Image (cartoon, rainbow, N blue to C red; front, side, top):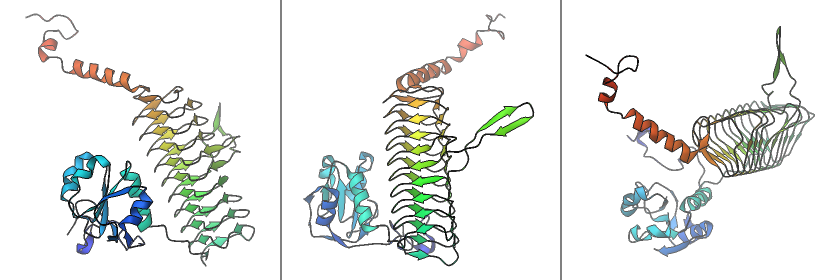
Length: 365
């Protein structure tokens, strides 16, 4: 029995128990979707699905963009492979080769052809609780036990999964998806926004003032604005603004378990990886990338194109296109020079330490 494949089922890309499937498609149609050229094999070969190089069969498509797996390419039984021009000579005889400079992007497009998102099932489930003072487009799908509060507006072809809560006045543009048990409040969403299961959008930010007798909460009176094509990962939290808005720019992607504080503003196409925390009122430019567990202090400005290594601690502004890591954050080259120095110090000969006394004085017998 294969690991992770109960009851003897072999590993399968796009298990039909969980994924709908289209096709078959001729290789030439896949090449057109990729924007690549067929440089070997039969353009009319019908292909029915996807698979990894190691297990794909003669009616399946695979891909390679990492030279570490060149041997797997040479031995593959796949009927079609998507490869970079540099790897064409390793494609087995008889296998259709779709050649493109971006094999992974090509793979994404082909996978979307075989496993397109099924259309929504229009209508409101009988168990949903829907306030009469809301507007739900007739093409939207409202799942079991969903709650839609007064004044909410849900656009065409939206899908709201089981147990999700759409708060008062929340607006969803067309083709949005809200995962199971997610909650949205004080939020305005553009088109094609995807809120993954368990995410919390628009809850109060972490704002309070200290007094001699305790803490006094500061009302959080802003909103969350999610522009088109934003994705918010599972169990992530995006706080609403204190006075202004918290804004996530068009095309930005937040991984699972990300925390975005109140009044934070992200530019276009930012990539924020799991367990990142961004404190209130920090502003990110476009195309910023933060690897896992980056922590960002509040009221900072991060320039467009800046990149942050995992577990970086950001305590001051970072210029555009900078590459930093470490805590506190510093240029990558500086970080690795310091690391090299520490390694050399740690590798000192034991005799060097044995020659010194307990308080750093020269030893004597």
